[in-house]
Structures are given as structure tokens and as C-alpha cells.
Image 1 (cartoon, rainbow, N blue to C red):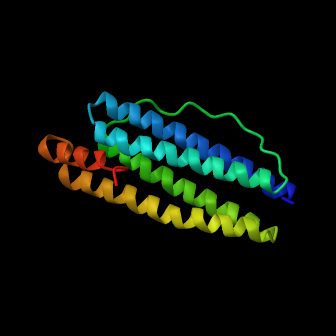
Image 2: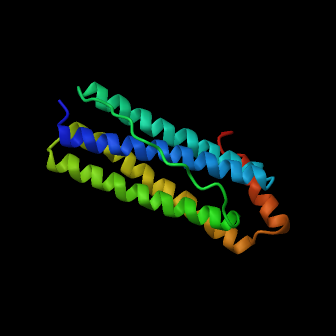
Length: 164
């Protein structure tokens, strides 16, 4: 049985994951408006991943006898200053999610909920990958700049995500 404290914490994280999905979809729309379909592809895949995370948490709460209580999702930003600024926001957001996952894990530790701890190990590991990926793209953007051939090449590279 899931404790009320942990249930509430999981419900908050479900909201954060769904908000993340919504944010990445808004970012994809921004990239599309700049005619950067590769960037949009990368962000749309992020949208699906975040939604998948929310559903994994949703399933876990239900399997443990808890009650999922969906919360309000705020409207995400619509505009960003540039592709570099966009990925600065991606990295900043992933770091925020890492902090939230770590706090959720701390609740699971305090509640001595071993099943939740096992589930959250996967999320903790994935956040390392998410931050590294966003950071690598951001650093490449900073080196390449936002004009010309380098940006086009990067867009093509990001378009290949999910084709493996």
C-alpha cells in the first residue's frame, strides 16, 4: 500500500512530467516556426518520453493502491530568443526535473517504500542521460553558432533521433 505522503509526492511528479511534455511540445512548435524540423523532432520525442514517464508513475500509483489526482498544467512559454536559448531552457528544465526526482526518492526513503525506490532508480539514471544529451546539444550550438551551414547540419543530425 502506498502511503498518503508518497501518493501526494507521486501525484506532484506526474504533474511535473505532464507539464514537461507540454513544455517540450511548445518548444517543438517554436522550432517548427523557425523551419528547424530536426530540432522539432528531437523535442517531440522528448514530449513522448515525458508523457511516458507520467504514465509509468500513474500505473505505479494505481498498482500500489493509491489514487491518481491530476493537477492543473500551466501554459508553457511560446517564444524563445534563439535555438541556443531554447536548449539553455531544455537543460535548465532537465536539471529542475532531476532535483524533483531526487526529492521524490528522498520521500520514498523516508517512507521506507522499497518498491518506489526501485522504480525511481530508473528515473534517476535517465536524468543523468537527459542532462548529458541536452548539455551536448547546447555546447554544440554554442560552438557552431546559429547561422548557416552548421545550424542546418545540426538540424539534420537531430532529425535522425528516433530512427535507430
